[in-house]
Length: 324
Ligand code: SER
Image 1 (spheres, helix red, strand yellow):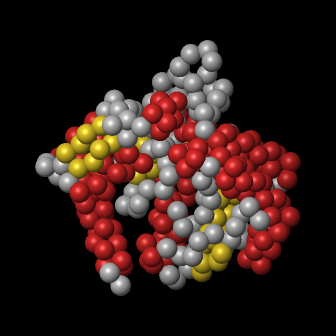
Image 2 (tube, rainbow, N blue to C red):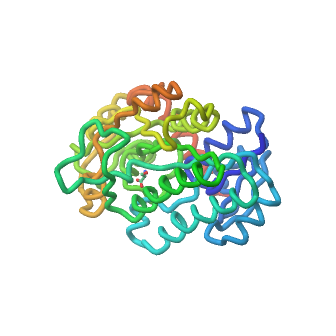
Image 3 (cartoon, rainbow, N blue to C red):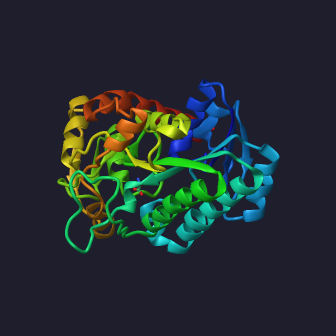
């Protein structure tokens, strides 16, 4: 199958390109930026420049590539988006419109959308239910969340009205051996990266912060499974998916199992902490489990055991690349 990725240079793209190539798909990666050195493993697949805020360029490229399926990953994440809401609106909102329109005009049959726990926020009536189900009133507090809600609704609209079969997942905070990129959930990833490279980490979140998290291999598998599921099995376009929901200090304890000398302290940043506190503590993913047999494989400690050697390799490779 010919598959085009937008925002391929980000954290998800890094692992998704490899998984798609391993399944023998013909992958066309696109991003505003050139292929990052961390994506060198994907040198077999082609890399094209694409700014999704440019409608004409998006349609032109889709027409040239004529993909069977698009994974739309390009987005500005929550913390960076609050620093530059206009940029988040342009990339996430206008960009998603442009990608959907390009699919409709060029006749791309399927689009996979990456939504997020950031679509949720505290309803005026009280706290979110825990676990939070798919269908609660959505009150996002960030421009990232606002644009992801709109993206989900646009996906449902294009599926119904325009024959673009859109489906996707609401990702928990994703953790992988990659440098974080402007998310509020980045404290979890830094607990691993900085424990390896600095022997500890001062978290920008309180020790009792609890949000849904997921290890990237599960996240990539979820995307592939929802992408390939028969339409008849899908009762909705966008699904909650869940893996584990540790407190920040439980992540620290898990890292210390592998690196006993690692030191963790907590100095909450009010803006990012407020975003984290607005998100669900855990997700109800029963619809995904029922409709396309979703099931995570990694719990917190299994992730820690697999991830720490990968973070070590990533940092060694980064040091080698930056010395050239
Ligand atoms: N990980 C994202 C963020 O922190 C949420 O989807 O913005």
